[in-house]
Image (cartoon, rainbow, N blue to C red; front, side, top):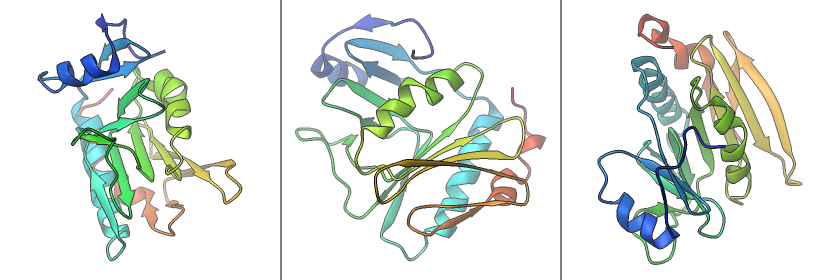
Length: 192
């Protein structure tokens, strides 16, 4: 279940037109629209830190890192989401008829928070698994240096691994992220 009660019910087309005019982000699932809460300073620091680490790890690869403002479609116009960070490797593909809805992220990152953790692990994770291009899904804890990594293998099965302090995460494209670098200084910032 998304993090809050629906704010409104509308078609996907109505949602997209309405959402483009809103100052805050909203996700869409089968007609229901849900407001996305703003993050704590620690949440935002983790999102920025993993973006920086991804930037270094992906240098020289044909990949682009996109911020939390990038709308992603999962499914046939029944689920629109925002990841904390997403990566596209190869050519960026937009949903037909739009200039702002991504179809093909290859890496998706969510920073866990008390209010969204169940959603990030449940319905949102199901949505990301439906996107054929997604190869890696990372969940970052705000409470400890702890990165959960789901990686799609060549047979299409998902493999799960946890990396903690002193460890690293190797993405499907062989880019490696250092857990200590992601979390450096993060716990000096207010969080949950």
